[in-house]
Image (tube, rainbow, N blue to C red):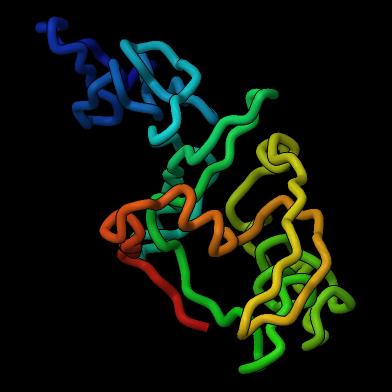
Length: 203
């Protein structure tokens, strides 16, 4: 790359990419060289490697710095779990946006909620509000066609509590954690605190 020249001191494993000094040994966007992006992996010692639980990976892009003129920023994800098939359960490191779960105060059900439809780009028939999200949704805004093909469908369990009535399980690519999952993966209350990006939008 014409805009990527090694620094004279390579002991620190830093390089210059687009006039910026980056640590090539751990930079997921320039792993071992400018433009070498680690997709669903993490840069370790200048090599894209499989992440461990708790590590941060980058995958997809979303507007986060309140400046759409400079393009979308890479999304950072925390690896919560890895199953026997090597599939990752990940959650965004920061709050990317803020939207209403649904338009009702009671009887909230994930299966027909607005947030489920918006996250996955479902048509009007999928939510009780009757809003079509096929052309305005998170999954299309954040991921390319190739990236979307890498996201597998997961079974989201039905649940019931004092606020939410019983609902059957659904199959979705993008979903919210259940309360049980939050308690399982975030045992420390300080770890459960969410921090937003510079650009957190309100519906």
